[in-house]
Length: 201
Image 1 (cartoon, rainbow, N blue to C red):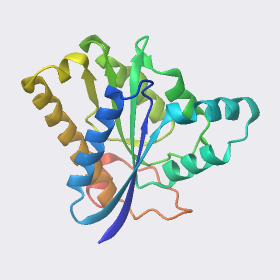
Image 2: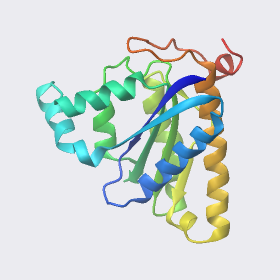
Image 3: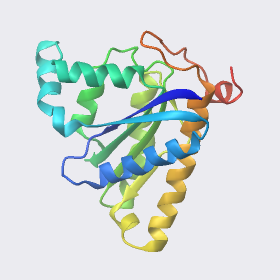
């Protein structure tokens, strides 16, 4: 059995938040799909380290707490990144966290992207804001992004459809994680395509 770590970064501002709820569902779906691995999930709410992120941007130096979060995120076997949609894009706090990472920190890392918002019209933020950001960081992003509007939590039928998307995305992330070498403290992922990872290359 292989030990795997999945890092979850969620940028919800309220507590509790639908962003954290979606993040937890995605983490559980990924864990369930990695049936042959010993999976540890580490969840980080950016609201808890917002001041540390801001200070890092101003000074160039992370606090010990932020340094620990960065280390776990960059060394994890896979990453789930979830943001609320503000003004048709990711939140400022979400962007600021990824701005303080080393530009090669997510090179080739399997990443699942998700977002929450008030209405369905903001769902395009996944493809027009989040994907370009993580393409720039050279992460390997799973094909299925998950967007949850307020209406997705409002009925059994809608929540069921959301859960289907969550489980599909979780399986895709699990496939990438399972196909990649087990992460070690000083590992750096090579940038490879989704198809290569699924083929075991």
